[in-house]
Each structure stands twice: as C-alpha cells, then as structure tokens.
Image (cartoon, rainbow, N blue to C red; front, side, top):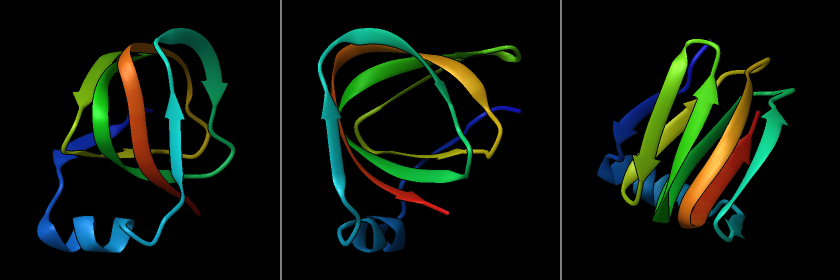
Length: 86
C-alpha cells in the first residue's frame, strides 16, 4: 500500500475548499489509516515513510492515502491541508 500523489486539478482544488483544514508543525509521528483519506496540501512539505518506500509531497499536491496504510509522517515544513475521510 502506498499513497497516490498528483498535482491537484482545478476541480479537486474547488472540491477541497469545502473540506476541514488540518495543520501541524514540523514533527515525526506514526499513523495508521482506518479509512481512505484524500487531501490537498495547501502549504508545507512532508515525507511519509511506508513499507513500500518514502513518499514526499508538498504545497499543490493532491494525496490519497489508502485505507489500512501504516506509515510514519515526517513533517519537514509546517503542513496545512484540506482533508476528507471516506
């Protein structure tokens, strides 16, 4: 399992505006997704370490984390994102 990272389309940007916002300062922490999460990265940079490799993303990226993914977030620059579970 690995996250899918693409540049956000205009449609995805518009859709994400209605989603809640989450932000976190530079830090490292383990995380497990018990449902799929879609998110639009508004600012910052992070690396997600998974058994399948490391995945880096930042401002302007649209990321889909699959249900069941176990990973470690390494936030390099304060992250702010819109997110939606399900």
